[in-house]
Image (cartoon, rainbow, N blue to C red; front, side):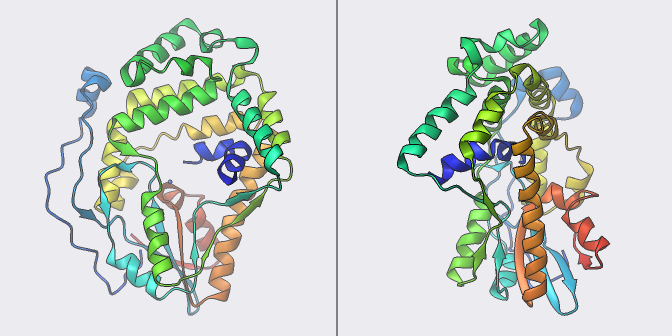
Length: 343
């Protein structure tokens, strides 16, 4: 039920997709040959049909940690990436050393809860399924221009030609499914495997684990508000997602390589076309979703500051491109007088 409430209440979460020196050195990594990422001209000439599945084997340390401090209190921050190689094994002695000295671990995402009983849960599930579908038995093609639908058909046939159900989805939900299929075909995973590995490490060391709390008082109302949006306003989300799939998959693979070996300078240099911002603008038409998403980000920042205030050493995780952003958490820490060191 918790997963359903999270999905029903924070549809936007699917689109929110992202180090000071310490004594411990990064975990040694196995020397392996990584396939070279296609050049821009190769990607343009060959299109996505020439995209090779990324293959990174051996243990990888990921990026070094950021250190946020004020006085003798320290918050270690690990920047995570939402698209990593499926078969990559992550291991970082730097993270293990920081966790061993921490009094708290803060997860990157919120814990979403709502007070619903078994009958309400079934009704919510039915409502959730209905919300994903186009109203009035319309098809996806009814909301797209002919050129847009031709692009969609080309991508669908390339990544999952047998998925006939996608035609019944509203544009934003079709965008999410198509995106997931493309990520899978590129040999990448969207599962938070690194974050889960950090959580397991914390549990073994008996480090208390906390999450920002997000309570949804009326999940049915949230779904109803989203369902009342016209699918026509969602077309920009699908269009931006198709553009990213068409142009950015090789760069996603290169970002995954850079994260795996801890090359933060390379991550900074690579362009990051975040189509989620377009999709979030669509969702902002739902006042409840907009409020929930804004509160989720504020709740994480409040928890991080609380950890710095109350604990000598704490540890937190956040998407790395948020940490690298000029208006992200690290920038706000600097503006508030904290010392920030990192890669």
